[in-house]
Length: 567
Image (cartoon, rainbow, N blue to C red):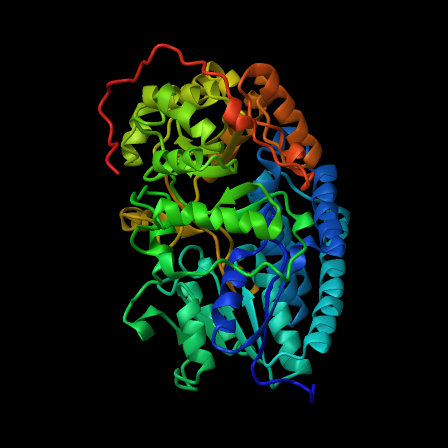
């Protein structure tokens, strides 16, 4: 490594993080740092064939052992098993815990997620997949370091990538101790915040990580590289810049030159950061701070430039909430005669309930709306501080679907205090709306030690899911609430909800084939259905069918129940 350049930086996202879009965080960091003269290489290991094959092998192996009635939202909840298994395996391989203790914990990881027991032979087969993963990862990391010869290795560590990141950092320090190792990521606001007791354990167990960046990292990373952070300071936070957040209007477009965009179904963009709301189960505001947004004219300029650079017409938008600007954005795109298709997170609101407005959005390029419906119970909506009603949720879904816009509905199962009656109201809600839901996705309620608004109200009920010995193996532990419904009941209801949707024909697609089938179903149900995602794979074809959408506006009917729709 004698040829190492002192200003050369390697930024990577390691497995496992769903590769829908090229990694925006490190792509944004690249363009930001290169303005200051640094040479930056960006890498996404999640699209590499060997890691994708191991991922599928892991879940295919699990599927052989667990009956279908216990699958539930199989991949979503299974990610908890995979990331904890990766972490426990890494620590056990480095001398933590006896063999029997390690095996017992892995069995518990599976049981407390799928509520099914693995036998010894099944455990060994599953563990062999993780053995293979770390063998492949070692070859991958060593090859990268030898080829790039960086002075700094920076990794984005979400909870799902933490085990792989720790492995890579430790390997780097063993082989090339002169490389500075730096970690950052949103997990330090959600699953592993500084206020959590697990954060101290993480620092103690990772001496091979030189610097930990907490919060939006561009300005902090630059100060570190410039030598403006004391050498003895390991944790770097927004306090170093007096809490100042980035002005998103001044950010340049991310540099995606390090990625093969043919490996991703979407490109990505954003118009805002954070969210103007604070639902009691969400930690977005804790990481991104106050809500900020760009001018829509600038946003359209940037979408146009991204299309010119990369010839990708469909965008997965990173905004937490599109409602504040969606109408103005659609109008701007229509005025400019542009056809970009955008997949947004949205909130039930008066506008979303209005077919006249959703028709405008459809013409302006709204491709999919991801709605946090959460529950069909009026009582629980109030407990969640959602500020919406069940009837408004129904009207919003119908209004979007009537315009042909794909609807993804998110539900939280087992919010504290949920009763069987509350849950039945969710089942009834979905059955009533079955033809207007493109995708139903649900997750059991998760409690985080810190970061959830008003989470301190639950503090007296929190407890650790796994035994005390698990801390050294897992580092970031799983907290639950000792209240009704129990974790087991919460997951069983989720299993029931998924089975209910299967019977109704509502999909939750993951694979390309499943996406195609879901899109074909949508076309059969809705005359104005947006194009299938498969149609966008031919990058040489410009799709502009949104300009010719039929006007199918039913009589306007907006529910009048009280709700909070102020943006």
